[in-house]
Image 1 (cartoon, rainbow, N blue to C red):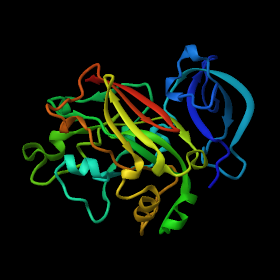
Image 2 (cartoon, rainbow, N blue to C red):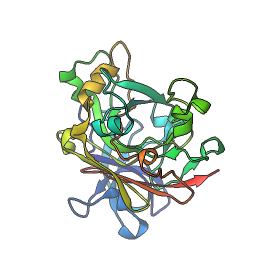
Image 3 (tube, rainbow, N blue to C red):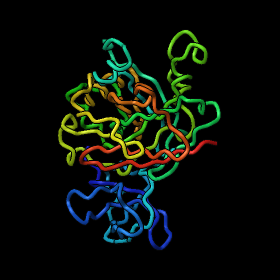
Length: 296
């Protein structure tokens, strides 16, 4: 599919309006995640309710505005559900002490987890006792309803890519005292604000082969994760096909494709998220998703 925008941002303009737009990059490799009021990034206003529309109802206008504050590209209401893939990078499988799964390991996040770029992740009391963790991920955005999609046609259903952070609570995920006898992922990763997305949506033709992208996660200025997307066991096209087997992936649904090695809980000693922690997920050709952390 081919949406009318190349990159999509959501922002507050200098005149106070909340808008979506096509950013006008000041130079080719400008990182949209670095946008501040001082950068005076300009954007063409996008008109229309359905950001994935390909019928002409969605229009990139000639109205140019200045971005005052960059938000996340999507709100919770824009996302029906997030399908997430566990144990999909060889490096993460090794650090977790697990064997490569024969098929993707799937769990779900509700849309209430979706959080803006530049906004603090809120760690609730139940997750504050040395267990909150980050997971930088490449995210796939489904642009039209998909069911029983062959791998060869999967790209036709991908509207865009973005960066994501699968914030997690490790004790609630796999400590038997909190999670029971088997690891459980839904509750431990499903708290409000636990899925920051951004800084923008990028159309597939600007990305090319996503396998060539480099993912980096920087926490408090320290690079914790660095891996090519080619380390994925199950690539983006396969995931779209597999997840659509007998199931309708609704337009706007997100696939979080998994995280590489280097999560905080696997470090020696572990490094958990604390109030004031800064997290950055950077993916080449997309930009940097930035979020802080607060306890509440």
